[in-house]
Length: 204
Image (cartoon, rainbow, N blue to C red):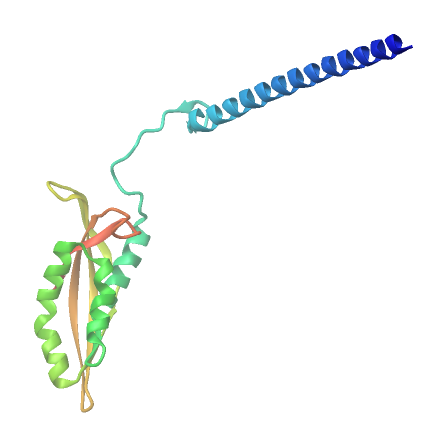
Protein backbone atom coordinates (compact mmCIF):
# COMPACT_ATOMS: atom_id res chain seq x y z
CA UNK A 1 0.00 0.00 0.00
CA UNK A 2 2.79 2.29 0.89
CA UNK A 3 4.54 1.56 -2.38
CA UNK A 4 1.35 2.32 -4.30
CA UNK A 5 0.96 5.68 -2.57
CA UNK A 6 4.59 6.52 -3.28
CA UNK A 7 4.09 5.62 -6.92
CA UNK A 8 1.06 7.94 -7.07
CA UNK A 9 3.06 10.73 -5.49
CA UNK A 10 5.87 10.24 -7.99
CA UNK A 11 3.43 10.27 -10.89
CA UNK A 12 1.85 13.48 -9.59
CA UNK A 13 5.26 15.08 -9.18
CA UNK A 14 6.22 14.10 -12.70
CA UNK A 15 2.92 15.44 -14.02
CA UNK A 16 3.22 18.81 -12.31
CA UNK A 17 6.90 19.09 -13.23
CA UNK A 18 6.07 18.48 -16.87
CA UNK A 19 3.21 21.00 -16.72
CA UNK A 20 5.45 23.56 -15.00
CA UNK A 21 8.11 23.13 -17.65
CA UNK A 22 5.49 23.47 -20.38
CA UNK A 23 4.17 26.69 -18.81
CA UNK A 24 7.70 28.12 -18.50
CA UNK A 25 8.41 27.28 -22.15
CA UNK A 26 5.10 28.85 -23.22
CA UNK A 27 5.88 32.02 -21.24
CA UNK A 28 9.35 32.24 -22.78
CA UNK A 29 7.87 31.84 -26.25
CA UNK A 30 5.25 34.53 -25.49
CA UNK A 31 7.96 36.90 -24.22
CA UNK A 32 10.04 36.26 -27.32
CA UNK A 33 7.05 37.00 -29.56
CA UNK A 34 6.25 40.16 -27.57
CA UNK A 35 9.86 41.33 -27.82
CA UNK A 36 9.84 40.69 -31.56
CA UNK A 37 6.62 42.70 -31.94
CA UNK A 38 8.10 45.60 -29.94
CA UNK A 39 11.19 45.60 -32.15
CA UNK A 40 9.05 45.58 -35.30
CA UNK A 41 6.88 48.46 -34.02
CA UNK A 42 9.91 50.54 -33.02
CA UNK A 43 11.52 49.92 -36.38
CA UNK A 44 8.35 51.04 -38.15
CA UNK A 45 8.17 54.19 -36.01
CA UNK A 46 11.78 55.28 -36.53
CA UNK A 47 12.35 54.01 -40.06
CA UNK A 48 8.99 54.73 -41.62
CA UNK A 49 9.53 56.40 -45.00
CA UNK A 50 8.33 59.98 -45.35
CA UNK A 51 5.12 60.46 -47.33
CA UNK A 52 5.64 61.40 -50.94
CA UNK A 53 3.51 64.01 -52.67
CA UNK A 54 3.09 64.57 -56.35
CA UNK A 55 1.02 66.75 -58.60
CA UNK A 56 -1.20 65.54 -61.41
CA UNK A 57 -1.81 67.40 -64.64
CA UNK A 58 -5.21 67.83 -66.24
CA UNK A 59 -4.66 64.66 -68.29
CA UNK A 60 -3.76 62.65 -65.15
CA UNK A 61 -0.02 62.57 -65.78
CA UNK A 62 2.26 62.78 -62.76
CA UNK A 63 4.25 66.00 -62.41
CA UNK A 64 7.43 66.19 -60.36
CA UNK A 65 7.35 68.79 -57.60
CA UNK A 66 10.41 70.99 -57.17
CA UNK A 67 11.28 73.29 -54.30
CA UNK A 68 11.08 77.04 -54.86
CA UNK A 69 13.35 79.64 -53.27
CA UNK A 70 10.65 82.29 -53.62
CA UNK A 71 8.12 82.88 -50.81
CA UNK A 72 4.59 81.74 -51.51
CA UNK A 73 3.00 84.97 -50.26
CA UNK A 74 0.01 86.35 -52.08
CA UNK A 75 0.33 89.96 -53.17
CA UNK A 76 -2.83 90.86 -51.25
CA UNK A 77 -1.43 89.29 -48.07
CA UNK A 78 1.84 91.16 -48.46
CA UNK A 79 0.10 94.49 -49.05
CA UNK A 80 -2.17 94.03 -46.02
CA UNK A 81 0.83 93.19 -43.86
CA UNK A 82 2.79 96.22 -45.11
CA UNK A 83 -0.19 98.53 -44.57
CA UNK A 84 -0.65 97.30 -41.02
CA UNK A 85 3.07 97.76 -40.36
CA UNK A 86 3.06 101.32 -41.73
CA UNK A 87 0.15 102.32 -39.50
CA UNK A 88 1.83 100.75 -36.45
CA UNK A 89 5.09 102.55 -37.30
CA UNK A 90 3.41 105.97 -37.45
CA UNK A 91 0.85 106.01 -34.65
CA UNK A 92 2.08 107.68 -31.44
CA UNK A 93 1.02 109.92 -28.62
CA UNK A 94 3.11 111.89 -26.16
CA UNK A 95 2.15 109.62 -23.24
CA UNK A 96 2.64 106.12 -24.69
CA UNK A 97 5.09 106.63 -27.56
CA UNK A 98 7.76 104.32 -26.09
CA UNK A 99 5.33 101.38 -25.87
CA UNK A 100 3.89 102.18 -29.30
CA UNK A 101 7.34 102.21 -30.89
CA UNK A 102 8.21 98.90 -29.22
CA UNK A 103 4.96 97.40 -30.56
CA UNK A 104 6.17 98.11 -34.11
CA UNK A 105 9.50 96.33 -33.54
CA UNK A 106 8.40 92.85 -34.75
CA UNK A 107 7.74 94.21 -38.25
CA UNK A 108 11.39 95.15 -38.82
CA UNK A 109 14.70 93.46 -39.47
CA UNK A 110 17.68 94.51 -37.35
CA UNK A 111 18.92 96.89 -40.04
CA UNK A 112 15.44 98.21 -40.76
CA UNK A 113 14.76 98.82 -37.09
CA UNK A 114 17.91 100.89 -36.69
CA UNK A 115 17.07 103.04 -39.72
CA UNK A 116 13.48 103.48 -38.56
CA UNK A 117 14.49 104.60 -35.07
CA UNK A 118 16.93 107.12 -36.52
CA UNK A 119 14.30 108.48 -38.91
CA UNK A 120 11.69 109.15 -36.19
CA UNK A 121 14.06 110.55 -33.56
CA UNK A 122 13.25 114.19 -34.37
CA UNK A 123 9.53 113.45 -34.62
CA UNK A 124 9.50 111.83 -31.18
CA UNK A 125 11.19 114.88 -29.67
CA UNK A 126 8.52 117.09 -31.24
CA UNK A 127 5.72 114.82 -30.00
CA UNK A 128 7.02 114.91 -26.43
CA UNK A 129 7.66 118.66 -26.37
CA UNK A 130 4.34 119.66 -27.94
CA UNK A 131 2.21 116.90 -26.40
CA UNK A 132 1.05 115.66 -29.79
CA UNK A 133 -1.07 112.77 -30.96
CA UNK A 134 0.17 111.40 -34.30
CA UNK A 135 -2.00 109.07 -36.34
CA UNK A 136 -1.02 107.59 -39.70
CA UNK A 137 -3.41 105.95 -42.15
CA UNK A 138 -3.07 104.47 -45.61
CA UNK A 139 -4.92 106.97 -47.79
CA UNK A 140 -4.94 105.10 -51.10
CA UNK A 141 -4.29 101.77 -52.77
CA UNK A 142 -0.79 100.38 -52.05
CA UNK A 143 1.12 98.77 -54.91
CA UNK A 144 4.07 96.42 -55.21
CA UNK A 145 6.34 98.65 -57.28
CA UNK A 146 9.15 96.12 -57.61
CA UNK A 147 10.14 92.62 -56.54
CA UNK A 148 12.91 90.14 -57.18
CA UNK A 149 16.29 88.90 -56.00
CA UNK A 150 18.89 91.39 -54.83
CA UNK A 151 22.53 90.35 -54.25
CA UNK A 152 23.16 89.91 -50.55
CA UNK A 153 19.53 90.47 -49.58
CA UNK A 154 17.66 87.59 -51.18
CA UNK A 155 14.11 88.04 -52.40
CA UNK A 156 12.88 91.62 -51.94
CA UNK A 157 9.56 93.41 -52.36
CA UNK A 158 9.20 97.17 -52.62
CA UNK A 159 5.75 98.43 -51.67
CA UNK A 160 4.60 101.98 -52.23
CA UNK A 161 1.54 103.54 -50.62
CA UNK A 162 -0.02 106.99 -50.14
CA UNK A 163 -0.03 107.85 -46.46
CA UNK A 164 -1.78 110.56 -44.47
CA UNK A 165 -0.45 111.63 -41.08
CA UNK A 166 -2.57 113.66 -38.65
CA UNK A 167 -0.85 115.75 -35.96
CA UNK A 168 -3.15 116.79 -33.15
CA UNK A 169 -2.52 118.90 -30.04
CA UNK A 170 -4.84 120.53 -27.54
CA UNK A 171 -4.96 123.66 -29.70
CA UNK A 172 -4.86 122.54 -33.31
CA UNK A 173 -4.90 119.71 -35.82
CA UNK A 174 -2.87 119.48 -39.01
CA UNK A 175 -2.50 116.85 -41.72
CA UNK A 176 0.26 116.04 -44.14
CA UNK A 177 0.38 113.57 -47.01
CA UNK A 178 3.38 111.34 -47.70
CA UNK A 179 4.41 108.51 -49.94
CA UNK A 180 5.67 105.56 -47.91
CA UNK A 181 8.10 103.18 -49.58
CA UNK A 182 8.68 99.95 -47.68
CA UNK A 183 11.36 97.43 -48.63
CA UNK A 184 10.52 93.95 -47.35
CA UNK A 185 12.87 90.96 -47.21
CA UNK A 186 12.58 87.35 -46.14
CA UNK A 187 13.47 86.53 -42.53
CA UNK A 188 13.41 83.26 -40.55
CA UNK A 189 10.02 82.44 -39.07
CA UNK A 190 11.74 82.26 -35.68
CA UNK A 191 12.30 86.01 -36.03
CA UNK A 192 8.88 86.82 -37.47
CA UNK A 193 6.13 84.20 -37.90
CA UNK A 194 5.17 85.88 -41.18
CA UNK A 195 8.63 85.06 -42.60
CA UNK A 196 9.20 88.67 -43.74
CA UNK A 197 10.52 91.91 -42.26
CA UNK A 198 10.90 95.58 -43.19
CA UNK A 199 14.49 96.31 -44.18
CA UNK A 200 13.88 99.93 -45.14
CA UNK A 201 11.10 102.40 -44.32
CA UNK A 202 11.10 105.67 -46.25
CA UNK A 203 8.59 108.53 -46.08
CA UNK A 204 8.70 111.10 -48.87
